[in-house]
Image 1: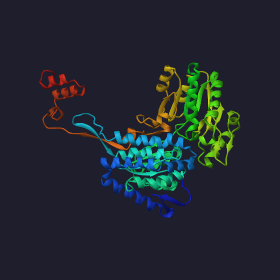
Image 2: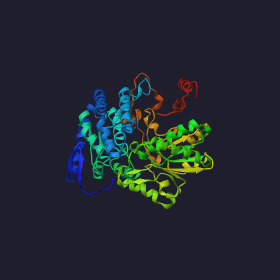
Image 3: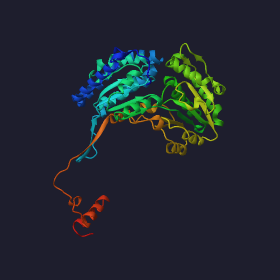
Image 4: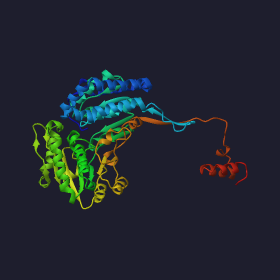
Length: 489
């Protein structure tokens, strides 16, 4: 969220001069606070109406959404529906069905009552610009909050789509899209929020956290990292091998050309199995991407140069086994396979976020566990294996936001599983009911009557009262009764 030169920015769908930006943002935040304090966002009717409005938006404006994602990232409409619109339709329908039941701890007098946090801010990202804008929005409005959504300026067509349509289908006074660049983000973080969700890079995540600390604002960060894929031999089954490779290729190249926080970053495989795996990956790439239209492009020239730079290191270039062609004019990079690039090179120390796949060999597949443990904790660990002992060790010995066996990326589409990282890959979890919980406060409510009173809790103290308290705190209710009756000391 670094500073840039003054410019015209989009706030609430209208152009605003940068000079008056602070005033405009302040007015927008105040309007959200007024909407929340009115109490209407807490009602069941309001929450349901917002989710139904969002579903109408996704249905009626589907073609426009596809065009925006195509313009920003070159996404084929099938990929856009699979990874973004389809997931959103499912999530909104699930929220309508499930999130309204209070979380009762016991059917007695003690309970947890979920309440909305208030006015929340969502910073979205450019690689899944529709899905990761509206997925947390679903949870936030389902919980009864007023919401400010700041889409990424690096996906301008999608940001404009959101700015043009959210107010048409949802309550424009309680759900606002605030467009703009880094200075808009800085101005937003000058204000007090009841929760901030940021999706993006660790560098900007640190800036958001520092700004939030001034107001003691709770923050959830979704940051990504280098997601490893452990590839076992699968018992020699040709069918299972091909199925696994299909899923690896999709999990690397079919989700925004590898520009996804959950995308496979690198593969770990035994040395003896490398020729078989590489042959299968090459043939699958040829079969999947017969048309360049079926893979997204790189988001912009800056990211294209960053990815090109990873390959310009001579020691890295020497490890390229397949692909590597660069098309700067169209911002396209051919799917690229590298074998054992130097572990201290940038391609193995930074998140790749692009269509480059290093394959790293190990002597035994079990060695991959130490390899993963020696590096920052990723958002996801993937492992293709039939070995139950290996699966157990991966779960118990590695730390990551999630673990998926025998597939990749699909965990994001499962409503019952939370999405979030750990350590440097982020913290805080949302998705499905977990989105509702992220944007709610579970208020503890205890109601007591007057029939039973325990005198042992009050002074003056004596030995019998201390004995009764000891029994109670140990859940020894028989001993408590005996002490109370004077039958036990």
